[in-house]
Each structure stands twice: as C-alpha cells, then as structure tokens.
Length: 132
Image 1 (spheres, helix red, strand yellow):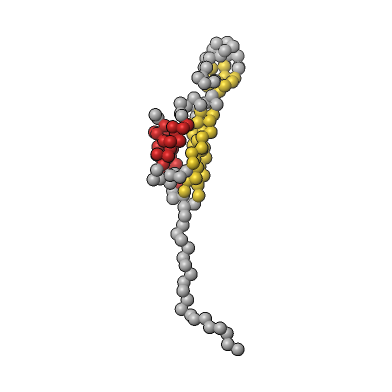
Image 2: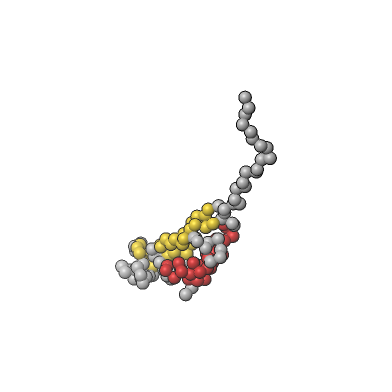
C-alpha cells in the first residue's frame, strides 16, 4: 500500500505553501497507469492530514486516461486496462503519452481565522439627555 506514502508526500508538499490558512480541497491528477487505488489514497490522505492544516480538506482526484501512439503507423488511442503497449495494427511497441501522472494541480484555501474583533471600549463619559 504505497498510497500512505503518497498521501504523506502530498501533505508535506502542501503544508509549507498554505502557512496558517485552512485548506478546503486539494486536487490531484492521477493517471490510470500510476497504480494508485483512489479509495485507498482517500483513506490514507485522511490519516496523513490529521493534525495539519489539511485535516478537514477534501481530496479531489482527476483521473487521466492512459493513451499511447505507434511511431510505426501513427495510430493513437487509449491503452486500456490492463494496458496494451504494442500496436494492434503493426505490432510495434507503443509510446506512452499519458496515464502515469501524479500531480498536485489545485489547492483551495481560506484565510486563517483572525483574532476575534475587539469589543468596543467602554466610555467613561456619561450620556445625559439633552436639556432644553
């Protein structure tokens, strides 16, 4: 289960960027060939984020399709799962174009809550109704 180390790496990368702000969401782009189980990563993220500015953050995952191109015939298309990495037309190895990504692409934060507003200072002056 490498998802825990991935989640810890995301927390380590994001934490210095946000300072004292509150993180609302983190969006990752993950290729379908990156061998990441989204449900395991979500669980691991919740564990890794505990006690940090990311504790209540939502983890959003954009899955990137595995795609490849044949340099022999120029054919391009999805690799499928499990991936097929040779050309079905001319039997040459395919060049992988996408599907192995693992990137932090978006971070949404709210400013850190500031100190409570000060109560208005009590006035030493007494107000009396205007005399006529």
